[in-house]
Image (cartoon, rainbow, N blue to C red; front, top):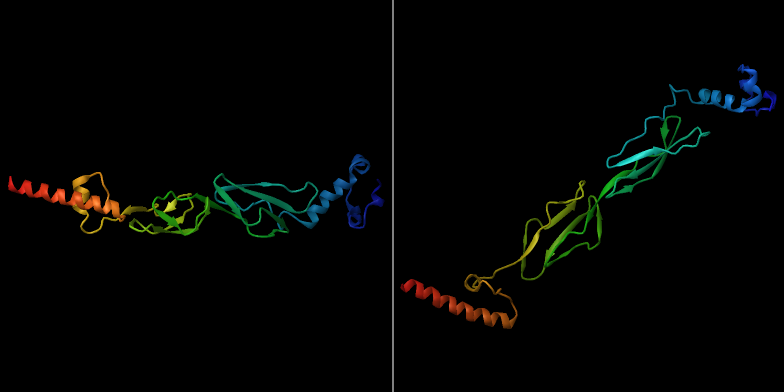
Length: 206
């Protein structure tokens, strides 16, 4: 290919002097490189500083002959990407802000209670409200949030059986029975309660 046969876009570059070997072997690449400098000088077009993200990484996936810089983002294990996975830079302007890596929290382990949202994974900063089953009371905060370090904040509460008035001595005396609302357990609890009162009376007489 001769220099005179180059496209009109490259034609103004005829003033560039090239070695004879380059004119016969790589004239297009030579002028393409010079054209890049003219269209995007380093002082005015700098896409070399890729936006960084927390809990993730990026790598350059630009085409070799492209004037556009393309960067692809990925997240560390345990995090999910929110936003565009690829962003481009041309003339020192990025097509969009860099994406974010949000933490993934596992389903809270809870006994004797229910979650306001029941699923396997939660994305930061999702909030979950916990409701204890009837007869159980909340220990710690009722509302927890998936945090950046992939843990729940504050810690997951517990739902503990609430001892009703009149059941304290039953629990203390038997140490094996729980004061439950169903009829059979209530009947047994009353018998144990009577026994505990008798034991207490005998100790007082000693």
